Image: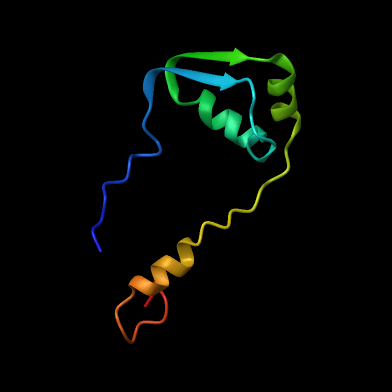
Length: 86
């Protein structure tokens, strides 16, 4: 299996542009909006619809993530190791 470089999720640039137009409901969470806003060191521009931004800001529900990461990590463990903390 070839490992590909993973982009740094905490990378911050001088400016961030957040599109808030036709956002899928699965992405309308306050924490995701906050993450986008904090990516710009000096400037953040929100482009789109005010009602979408308001919907995101009012949705404080946390979403569960079913990425399958735990299963992928378990498959990558050497034989005889049952968890990552061993």
